[in-house]
Length: 177
Image (cartoon, rainbow, N blue to C red; front, side, top):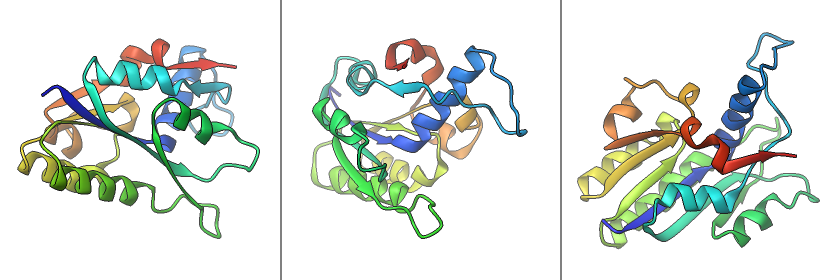
């Protein structure tokens, strides 16, 4: 299949990328949680280029939570080729509707277009219904995620046709500021 659809759970990739960067820099935890390198950023253009692997990108969707008003994150992602969908956080500042939005967008594409390769950038098992529908409709399925975001023998990893750990392309998809 020469076309691909790329869907990205921004929080999953960003948070796990910050953890991976911290691990590389040998940062230590101060609160018992995995340390994060808050200077690490995703380069959205390079991410799309690398993940597409030369396939024609039919659609690239990035979903996340609303950042502060002065944050240029979403404009940057849109300028690099993503359709950006942003949801407000709930009253407890928790992210809501991101995974379901990605599943809904993915199902719509799967059911209304010819089969292609679906590249899910997240290790979250909330995407299992999307993977099952894609497989049923003859789509190739791939999961691109940082290794600590999924278990290699878990449902998500064993249900897709290909697992691509993002740590193997880490230096190509982000930068520190």
